[in-house]
Image 1: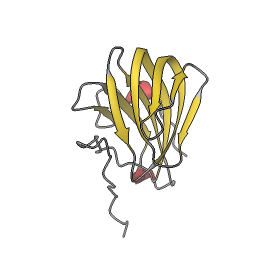
Image 2: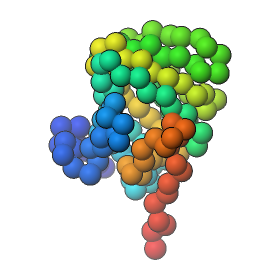
Image 3: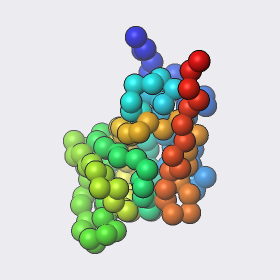
Image 4: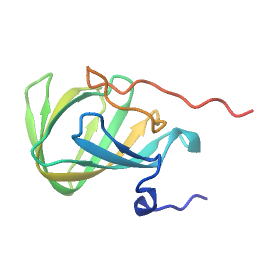
Length: 134
């Protein structure tokens, strides 16, 4: 059994700040736990815009604080995301988040991330893996 808090992750290698400066993420469950998913608390900062495309992952997101506009870049459809709202990127949709208020959310990724990922120039996380245990 693993028990940990997001608070205890602050300032550790599980507390990731994006190179773009638009978000930070505390990754409480990672690929190295070998449970088939990763779990994160992510904060996207007010006034920022981040375009993403999880070509290698499926992501589910639940907003717990703040407000954002989510645009499906493939259809042009826009959604207002507020606390209690979930969105699921089950089709690897290219999307853009426009953050109206600091936006705190809980995210689940499959396959799990390792904790070393950041978005590349296309908004994609690379598919990184952990070495097999011997």
